[in-house]
Length: 548
Image (cartoon, rainbow, N blue to C red; front, side):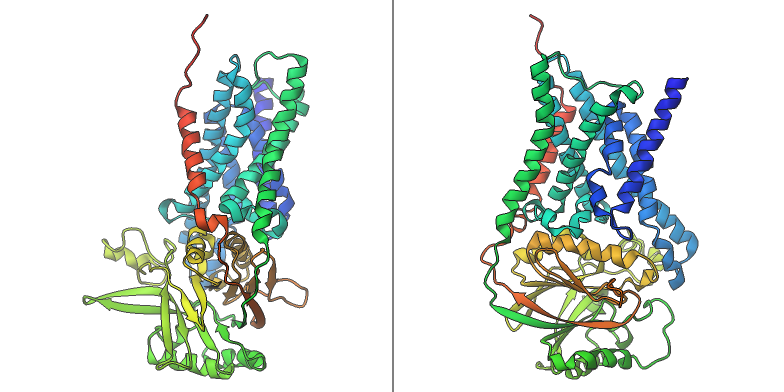
């Protein structure tokens, strides 16, 4: 009974420690260095228990982490979000993301169980060396699944935490945020191996064993050295291989941009009865002397002026352009398109110029829609479901598009799309010179959501090698350089300006690169191949040697 009690205590402690350290690695705490050892308690537990046990405890740890991480969701209640549905969504999303943690726990424990099954065979040595590497592949593969299944929720991947340390995030240029996450798991695996060696006498009896075959003392020392040295070598190799991809390229031109953060109330709540032009004019007057080439407004900036193609929206854009000295304007709006008598509504980014007839140059339609926010599953076939949407209409997804501003190719993205590595990578592959990301996070005003959201975009700049211009209606607004360094619009204390109006002028170097980053060229194919091979090896039996 005492041994069983001790095992329960260890499991609770491991799950709690991992959840707490992992939560602290992201905003609002931002203790990013903790990501390098946050998983150690649960990885250690995984090596000592059966797959079913690991699955349950990874889910418990994951739920604690996600429940705390998504604590900004109830803030939407201030903007007419019905609190029972909001709380249900909060719990449901936390449980869904925890399911991926549980899946990794099952796969990882199965991996170590397979290593244990080989402990009497010479393959056990090689399996013990390969297991931490395969474990990292499994984590990256499960993260990829979380980012794509059921439209995906690519929030707070492990590698995203390293956005605060761009010098260590550079391997994302090789394999995206997924490679970075795999390297983080490798680092955690090193600490896990060291911790298990040091604490094994204190740990409860393991449910399984991962010990290797009987070896001489010298062989044991070599094996222990390699168990630590091999993951370290891989991490070092990834860093060194990525550094040449940061070689500076000649600057061909400079784009002068004005980023306008109006801080309008949420578009779904009752706005003040004020002239909608005045808040913009006050901010545009501050940037007019800089003579910007482009003014970027947030998602929903034209919501008070009609749809993107309406006369009133065009007139508003012309007023804004002239107020800023004749600049082009990009801002968010709804767009309605009729095809064969059927109306389709899109979340859009509209590109206006005072130098073309009717002002409107082009319109981009958001590709990655947010389920339960911009549409409800199956609502195109079961139309009454559309009434459950907070915007009262079911939006349609669009296609990739580049805006051309005097030869500069601009890739527009909207809101949640900066969490999706695929969209930014596709834009870079299509020839984008700069990415413009517009969002409206005032849904969750007075919460940490805006800062967490902005943190996701840092990886997109590193992965693609492109600058990102980010404008939030209520923040966070600023520029992310191709190396991942940020210059946010800040308050008097040097923190990102949130829930307040402001404006920022930036000069963006435009580099026409002959080649894109390796990740842009290759994408996720290498990860998916490795993940598939690892899964095959995990569930296909190894041929056993017959007895002599």
